[in-house]
Length: 366
Image (cartoon, rainbow, N blue to C red; front, side, top):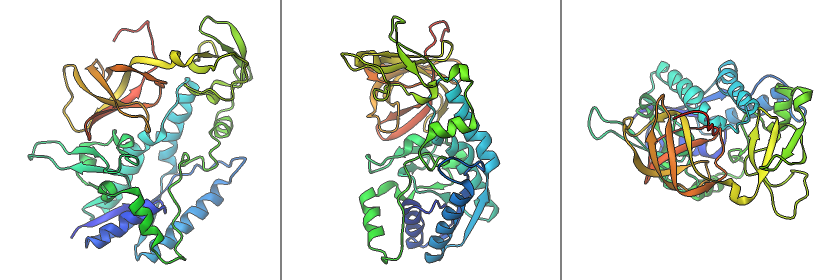
């Protein structure tokens, strides 16, 4: 029997994680991270939202006989997640905050507190799996969850071997529908909310409003041209942060054929649009690469690559470059490869590593 700290959000997945560990005979206790920034928002109050969230998770932990500690980590979260999120949008990127939060905030803080309380490790409600090293000097391997429709390994590519060695993913071998059935079979007065699909620090889902509040745009940059590839002005945008690669709706321009956002040009303060074909991309570079299940390679290899969470992995050739970067050459061009998102590399179910997709720069050599 092990003593395990469970990261508890109050949602159904984290509660089922705790209950599964209890059923296995482990001793569990809960840790909840206080992340929501202090500043108010037009649609919600941070303090009121915190109070509601924490009251709910305390009640649920109590019902399952789990002791709970709340860790206030808003300062670290601000530095490690929110500020990079804002900076990415300032630079015309589309960031994914979860890939920074997991290795930089959630896992190190939960694991640190777990070890402080003499636990053997920590557990989360992620749908992913871990294979232990085949030998004492080998690497833990991170695997996709059995439920491929729910698999969350994509968000975990930044984890270290030290973290993986002490992490449990009890839901990795379970289907999401089984977890829902478990929740439905509980007493009717036990209300288990689904995990939110919104950014956790923007409960309203209005990320544009959040960006405007936290980083007011220079009036000179709040509007600019929407152009085609040849530079012809077709309309006016409302600030680059309001657009993403591949976006079609909400452009406010008339065209006989569908047009999509194909580039956010910060230097010109311009949104470039083009046809669906213009979204196809034969390759990209990724930076800040973390190698998970394999040692850093020194030669080109073949694998499959996901360029966003819901993307079907695409066959590619990956070439290591200098300074923890790789070049990805897709076997078939991929649609809407978006700078700021993560490119995550797989060999079947095994997650090899991943990094952040860079903006194309024809003037920079590999």
